[in-house]
Length: 394
Figure 1 (cartoon, rainbow, N blue to C red):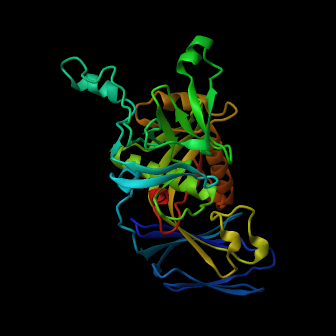
Figure 2: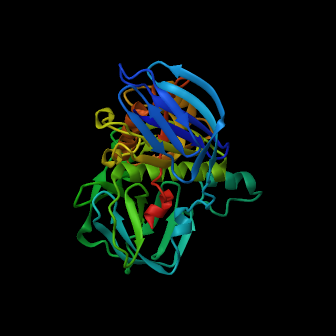
Figure 3: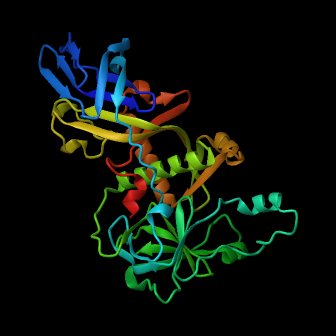
């Protein structure tokens, strides 16, 4: 019998769902202590030990009811240790005057060897030029002065970072290939003027970034892992890495810019997903019953490796989302794109499709009553246990 527990660490409250048992398993007897959940049915008796950092308050039980197709719902107060560490952003993780190696996240191929960064600087928001015009009472001093990194600089944006591959100290060599691309919606002259060159990993053919005529190369943070020289490269499952990076990006932007709605756009200019951040303080705990109840895709990617008495525990970011492919939600997407309160996240188009697939499959694995809120679909984006997303990049 499966158990799903969602904890809000700031509110110190928990929703416990004992998933609907098989026919013939009723009645069930449930007993709860601060650290142990016991479930007895006609067929079996299970004892589930909660992680040490989580302690329920049984006397606070309220809202006990049965939801068809879901199972038994109950709410508790909970004592959960909150991780008070500051969010580690990419600009904080990378340090000047240190050497780094850039890897393709998908296959581990070295993209840039022994790059010593003299300066690591954050990029302003995408509409910084308009803001300068609003605040300056004299001609814009930054007009026609694009922000290009020098030979050993790294400029960091929301979903990408900029480096200069023409530097003598950084020669990409045979690890990457460049493919010129043009958008079909543009005229021939416009596309020729605006054409960028895609950076493609030669080993796995993943699209890593783009380079322009100035020699500045944009790498997307979902495609590259940056580690200090001398450290071994550890492969991270693709879906876990993408979810972690996106979760960290949403949390960081909501904190620094007080924005909670996002459009996820491809580098081709198309909008793929609309995302609304609900909270970033959820803690998810899931316990599988017997092997027959294991779903094809669990909330936790490696849940299939756990035995029937194992507990999966994850920090999570809860979001609402709308898919925008195949002409779905066109009017809402257009409204969001024209709303100054909505922030745009630009990623490779293939990564946008990967993210949409992760959202859809994980939404299906939630208890049915938690899959929708109003017209939105609900999803929990989960950073890797014990790591902030940006820790994965260093």
